[in-house]
Amino acid sequence: MPQIVLYWHPMSSATPVACALAELGVPHERVKIDITTGEQRRPDYLALNPNGKVPTITVDGAPMFEALAIELWLGHTYGVKSGLWPAGGTPEHLQAMSWSTWAYVTYGAQVFRLQAAKDMGTPGDAHGTAAHKALDELLTVLDGRLSQRPWLLGEAYTLADLIVASVIGYSVYLGAPVDKHPTTNAWLQKVQARPSMQIDA
Image 1 (cartoon, rainbow, N blue to C red):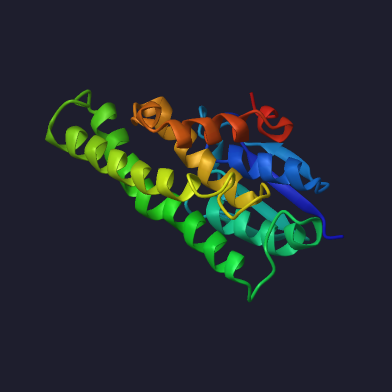
Image 2 (cartoon, rainbow, N blue to C red):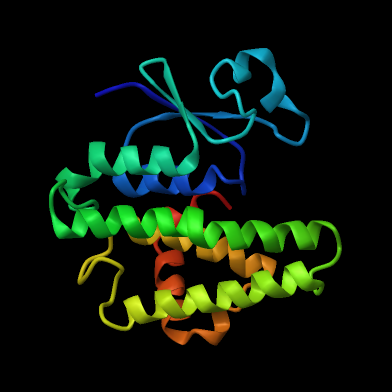
């Protein structure tokens, strides 16, 4: 098995990766990068992740960054055998890739807008209001998906649920109207209750 090192900080964008590693039971070492003191901008860390952010993993010394890329790699590498990720070439695999990317890109773009408005102290301005409305519309899309099945891909929980729920969960913290969507809200609570999701508190 490859030697995996996770460079992380608690309660950060590295959290979903830490949770995915726990869910999969993948042995790894953790190295805390204190982003509050600027450790992520040290030359030795920038050599692994030129963005100067967490998470980063190394696989036998080779670095990989961006949370979504890492999560998809973990799914492909470790999840198929354990049933936590669909095999390539299946309809479920196409959906897993689609919904995971939807969370980080389509939904994530609106989360970023809401975050920016909150950071500027203007969550109620035009940008914040538009982001809130767009998130509401996207949550309706997710609600429609989850109203047809207990989990994103069907009858069984997978890493796709973890990936998407991680982004949705963060958006709740920013004020996204998840509570207006009871199906999504109930699903989110089920995902967040899993033992693997408790490790980063």
